[in-house]
Length: 121
Ligand code: AMP
Image (cartoon, rainbow, N blue to C red):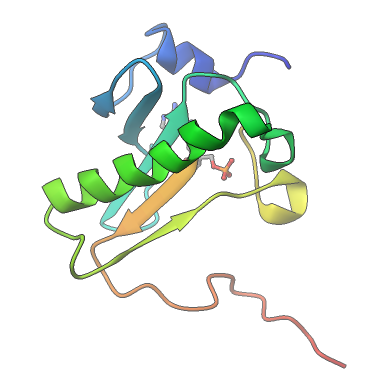
């Protein structure tokens, strides 16, 4: 897959507000927050979309969720609640083709999350 802006963040070629990093994942604040708390958890391995998650990636995808929950606990919002979202391809709203878990918190989040409600004939 072609390199994305998230590879540049992993390689420290462009700056990001990093909340957590280890050998497997990186968590950083979203540059265009959609909630009082909005950060992204990404694997260091570049996986383009949810469709490309392979069996050998199961552990890191699970770990991304545990990192999200730990950071929400550290930020004091785990008990009140938060939302994790992974958009896939154009209809899912994906714009960066390196999988990322959006983590949103800090206010009651509406449901469904999209403005345009599905029209049921
Ligand atoms: P998606 O539309 O699900 O692919 O989400 C991509 C997210 O990446 C958006 O919420 C963007 O605001 C965010 N984003 C893009 N570039 C950066 C950046 N340089 N630093 C932090 N977040 C970014």
